[in-house]
Image (cartoon, rainbow, N blue to C red):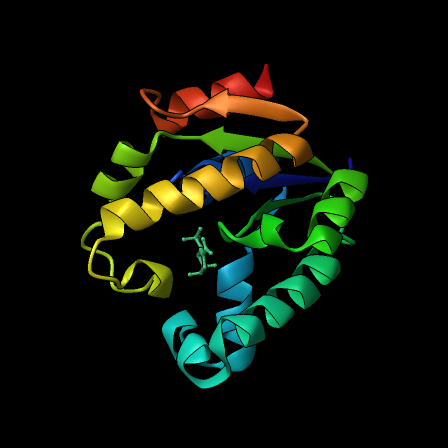
Length: 164
Ligand code: S3P
C-alpha cells in the first residue's frame, strides 16, 4: 500500500494512534519530528531557536518528501505540516491522509504542561491553540481523505475507526 499519513493539531494523538496502526498492520512507523531530531541531533525547540520557524519548516518539508516515498509506512506529522502548499499536495497524492480532529479545549488540556512545543510557549497558550485551530482546520479538511472525530474518542477507538 501507499503511505498512511496522520495529520492534526498538536496533542491530537497522531503519534499514539500511528504507532498502534503500524503495529497492527506490521508497517514501519515514522514520526516526522522524531526523524528531524534524529537527523539533526538537536531538539525541536533548539531548531526553532537557531533557525527560526522558517528553518524548521524547510526541514519538515524535506523530511515529508522523503518519508512519503517509502512504501508500507505510517507517518505521524507535525501539526503545522499543512501550512506549506507543497506538503498538502504531496500528502494528498502519495498517501491516504487521516485527520484526527480534536476540539481546542481538549488539545489545551493535553499539551498544557509540555515544554517541547515552541509555538505554545506563549503567555496565553489556550488562545494560541484557538488561533492555530481556526487557521488549520480548513487545511486539514482540504487534505484529508478520512476525518476521525478524536474529541471523546480514545486512541484504541480511533484506530478501529480508521481501520473500518
Ligand atoms: C508544530 C507541531 C509539533 C512540531 C512543532 C510545530 C505545529 O508537532 O512539529 O513544534 O506547528 O503545530 P506535534 O503536532 O507532533 O506536536
